[in-house]
Length: 415
Image 1 (spheres, rainbow, N blue to C red):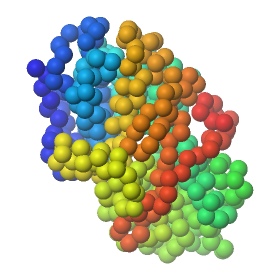
Image 2 (image 1 turned 90 degrees about the horizontal axis):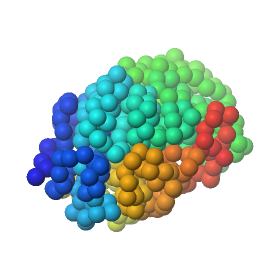
Image 3 (image 1 turned 45 degrees about the vertical axis):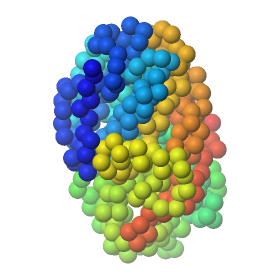
């Protein structure tokens, strides 16, 4: 018998992010404790953040991944093979990620799952690359995670990427007839930097004008009083502001913009998603972001598939997901199942090549193509534009970006 010790009553991110360092989680009800070379199982190692500042982005996607693993095992596994999951809490520490990856690879995993961030994932992905074990970030957005030349050809991300998020925000804003934008850039991580860069490039390609830009360091203690004053002093005001940031710092920056008297629309990327945004911005309005889905804390999206996902998640963990990042973890495992269903030999190169085939995958947000031989992230994710107004989130529309602009930065997914 393989025992699951995943929390069943996750009432909050803090509750589910209790550190269980070096704890083995076996998410299956059969199989054996031998190596994955034995043909009856696929072993997935999770080196993710169950604690620390990245836990709000890792915990729920990992729980959703475990939920999907359980569902697949109940249906017979992947190609008749039981899925076994082993986890390590990397505590949001880059140094710990590399150590955890080494330990998991030593236990004979077939796939490594790394945190929802390029900066955190890179040390673990580098270890996996050296061992020729495919490493998939559970939701890293920076496009370097999908570039085979940055970390290597065994490295993937189960996200559309901050290039797509920034570009989709620009495309939607252009569709509104907005012609001028101001960029407020969070400089804390690679994700936010690339979201801002690709927003600007896409908006300008579509005929928009960037009339000003400013930056702030991000983190937990955000104070943008001077940046807000400079923006408020512009005449005329821009049609909207793009805040390239992540929570909680991004939500704090938005609140401070509104408190300072900046009233133009605000647009941002998916890392603004979730209940924490509502908690921080209060009853502020005219805020938009490009998220991965709209469910439970967000109204207006009519989707039986998303409702079924949320219901299954709540049944398993005792509460509904607090952000749409959860659906990425769930869909990632579906992509694994689609890619590996007909793979007989689970050696690293075979698994890598199967992932890169780029088969369409049915997910709760619709059909999504994962990976390609050149672009190791989601190819065509339908981002959901969400409106935040008066303490509530509402679905506006679903939009796919036609193409990612080429910034000359080596992004293999551009064009």
